[in-house]
Image (cartoon, rainbow, N blue to C red; front, side, top):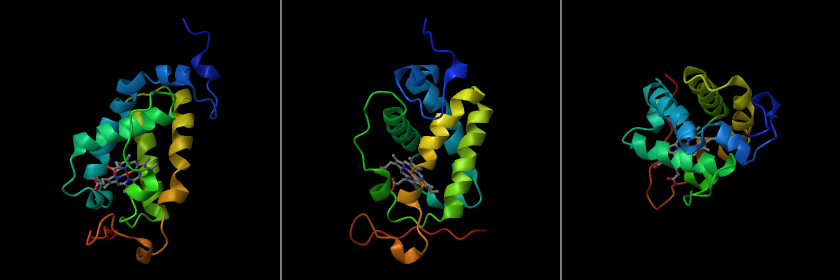
Length: 152
Ligand code: HEM
């Protein structure tokens, strides 16, 4: 039995005990399954995900987050900046998505005291992803289209 009580989790405390309290990989995946259902259904944000494989994204996102939430390093894909360089992610887009992540945690009833460390790590990606002009977008390969869904 871990001596660490759930109520002891502080926003900065990320270690293996925290990862275990989340329910490990399966616990993070559970949130992401609901989260990506919401993203793919959102009137604005769904425009980013057209033609994408939801199950694959859930799995990549879970590997990535597990690696920064105290779990094993299994993610070998692109870092968030280069992975999203062709997407016009405005601050508002980022904020809508971030809020939705919190809503997904709520929907799966993730213990409230476990949410803040995860949300803090998610929030920390903001600077790497947000662009102020569509001109800042570049394709990941030659001729890759820029994705900039208009706000409905
Ligand atoms: C904390 C914020 C975010 C994290 C940690 C994150 C993480 C990831 C990861 C790990 C991948 C897979 C990368 C790859 O295959 O190269 C990915 C892909 C993707 N992300 Fe994000 N993401 C974030 C924010 C966003 C936002 C705000 C959007 C747009 C609303 C977005 C849309 C996408 C899309 C459409 C893909 C698929 C790219 C493709 O396969 O072509 N992401 N994301």
